[in-house]
Length: 46
Image 1 (tube, rainbow, N blue to C red):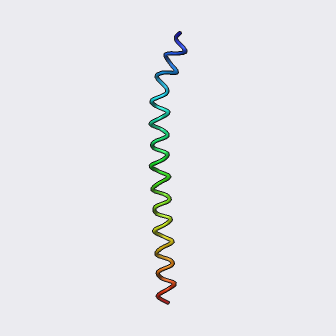
Image 2 (tube, rainbow, N blue to C red):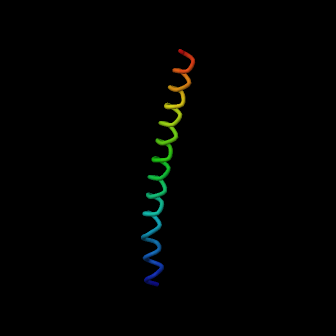
Image 3 (cartoon, one colour):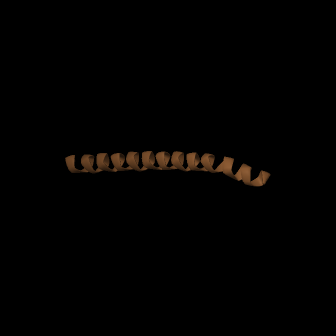
């Protein structure tokens, strides 16, 4: 029974961790996209 309670307590933490991973991943993708757009813009200006 005790193990079950521990697992129940861990689930929200795991979900929070997943949300943080999603946020970090989204920020990385966004900055990569911005960087690529900037490079493309610079190349077109040359």
